[in-house]
Length: 323
Ligand code: TYM
Image 1 (cartoon, rainbow, N blue to C red):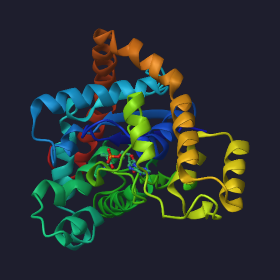
Image 2: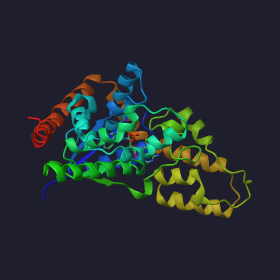
Image 3: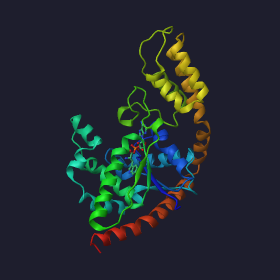
Image 4: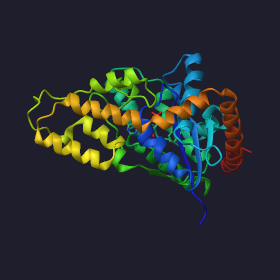
């Protein structure tokens, strides 16, 4: 059987958080042993919100470092910067011409923006088409993402199928891969963890900041002696991601039994999180001390990505009558 092509992206809009890690980075790292994995830092997409070039460059490098520190192996997976293969914007235009406006008007990121009374940029509106271009440019079979990106992969599938009907079999039709237990990681306030909600825990938070953030997790006002519901608690939800099953079972039992306050559970969550990322922290510090290594990884990644992208573009241009 031919190894599947796996592809996903992450925006350099700040430091990656637990939602990014459990929703996409960790599954992506697991996929690197099962196929040809391509992961990129989506700087073109980040331009919908990041308009500071210094921050853009810094975030791009720091997201790449986080990914490597967590176990992305550049010998196995291709790690590259989206804008190092600018042909993706050409493909985005070609796909835009096949995209019905209502399909994009129905996309939740755009709808949420409008619902909040904000004026969306054309970039935000067309965001799913650029995502489709990312996925189709590299002939991807599998796209590991969190649940919030499922709709975008469906748009990609629709566009690929439409192009194939019109122009012949030019595109591989991809599938999203979503790990159901971590499809949506909850943030400090109980909503989806997201930089735009300001409720995130970064992967490599400083110890003091991590402790403070964990202690600030929203809870109800149940007194210490009262039984508590582990199924609705953000503390338990986050603890499940980073602790051993036996420790989770104990916490759930103690929630139900009553007699312990939320502060005690938060302390355990802090310790589990700190421990969970300890080896990654050491690795990250080593990687950060050698900027040339990262430059090399990204340069090699760009070359490997272009080697796949350029033949796709030739094929697509020809199929559409452009060359
Ligand atoms: P970004 O940077 O917003 O998110 C990166 C990945 O993290 C996942 N994620 C979550 N998963 C579970 N729980 C959460 N709270 C949570 N928050 C974020 C996202 O689902 C995503 O998988 N648009 C993409 C970037 C992109 C892309 C692509 C992905 C651009 N082109 C092509 C796949 C294929 C995004 O959401 O980035």
